[in-house]
Image (cartoon, rainbow, N blue to C red; front, side, top):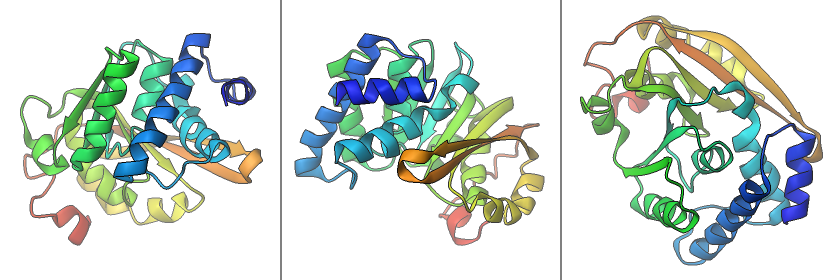
Length: 234
């Protein structure tokens, strides 16, 4: 897997060292072993893991500056937070999920691979976003395959500093999500600044990362409690 992964990262202009590549492979090995008993991902074949997990996570790395504070909301098995933290040690990365077995796995990865720049946290996003310690403290919120964009924004924007960005990983239906997101963008004072498009020819797919800027501070009413962002989206 190592040699194939290195070829793919080179092909897509992902910067990495030999040590980075070895850690990515070790991460996958840890994931497969943990998955046998804890079922944290349905994607386990090497080809799919390389293209649908690792490469997919790393696609926007050249768009992210060093020394920023990032949070991966709904990190699952650690995508995109773990690959990004491995490849760029100058990122201060938090991985957040409400499912404890997933965060326990990310902790194993952190300790096994000695990822000092990764902080796994088990919490519901509603509670986390209202905690003064974390609210409006991040430069970038990463969101990959978590929820529709209008829901993502209500959970993510309160975590961002003014002028910070949501990086939302989306598929080919992203325009439909944007059309359904106009109200949320206005209420949360956010705007879509750029859309990065990637062609993943090997799996016949296009991938989009939406870069959305938060322009001003938000009322503490957001995110709304009692699961309202999902039940009654903006």
